[in-house]
Amino acid sequence: MADRTDGARTATVIGGGLAGMLAVTALLGHVDAITVVERDRYPAGHAFRKGVPQARHLHLFLSGGQRALDTLLPGTVAALTAAGARNLYLPRDLITRTPTGWQRRFDERRHPSLSVSRPVLDAVVRERALRAAAASPTRVEVLEATEVIGLTGDARRVTGIRVRSRDGGAEGELPAALVVDASGRGSRAPQWYAALGRTAPYEETVDTGIAYASCLYRQRDPAAAPDAGVNIPAWPECPRGAAFLPVEDGKWLLTLSGVRGDHPPTDVAELAGFSATVGDPYVHELLSRAEPVSAVHGFRDTCNRRRRFERPGAVPEGFLVLGDAHCTFNPVYGQGMSVAALGALAVRTTLVDGGGLRPGFTAEAQRAAARAVDPAWLAAVGADRPYASADDAGAGLGERLSTWYVDRLAARAAIDPVVGAAFRDVVCLTAPPSRLIAPRIALRTVLLPRRPGLARPPAVVEPV
Image (cartoon, rainbow, N blue to C red; front, side, top):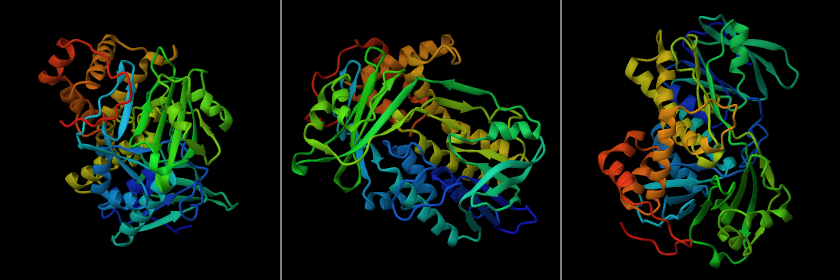
């Protein structure tokens, strides 16, 4: 373990996954040293690791997230593509069945979305982040198989972390001018707050009760593989969904979902039967031409949860929360990785614009990260509110009106290239939600008649 007796101009990052490595990248050149504390040991090559429980399910890097990623680590999107990630342009290369019918297949080429397995993503980003660190004046050390057991400092200021080796070593302390919590959905920040004598930040939840089951497939005849991925999300009248997307090495990843107990099986022999019960038989038809090449893996921790660290006084000086530790989303929307990149970029911008670490930096950076979260949060909770449990925070009149409008807008977006382009700009995190209420979009959404989408999956790509 590093011998650090003075935390001045040093940072500690809790968690060495995607959000943690992007946090490291954001801090390079602004501190003298960074220590990354990771509970797992990194696997060799592109392999799954236990500390990423949702890793075996679908992962998309939206176009807004890709831009942020390449700003932080230039060339990373190309490196992911070279490693086998598939770039799908929406809606040309990913066809979607909406509650009103199939979305038309406009050839926009505005929003590439990377479909990539988590082991490839993590390995490529980690390698490039550590390479950037090696070329930086900032010293970076990674402590694997080490867990954080608490914060040091007091209710006003965090001064470091307490750690323990998972290999049986003694406990120790790492002083730091800045502690970044990028430990993911399982963050213990609320418990650490209590130990410091602070009240945990206000927390919002919207829980659909959705569960997933995923399995890798290979096409029996690669020449006859579909020319687009497929997404059939659940809707209130049909609580089961499916997605079938290409990933690396010619494989396709199937993810089935179900809401509130209507959950998919985790037995591979039963998956095809479940796929026949979603809102359209198309994925079931595709599975008849493919064969499973992996076990089935389930996942149920899908609650939308946002901890309001950005509110005045909600973070002590020297403590910053990013990624899933700050805000988690229903994974069906593919937002989490992109929001992690946008949040890290917001931190870097705050450092650059303000001249580095300084009094008040953590509160300012936390507000900037929250602004990066806002569009994705509004989209996710707006879509999930119809399934939310009675225990969730209730929707006010404004949110109910917003939900009505977004529902009507989404139906229009499936058939209208003008509204569809605006909708995808926001969903892909390249434009603020205000884009959806621009006069031209609002008038087309509210005044034009609500019409159904296509009756069958679109085979024809339409120019725009």
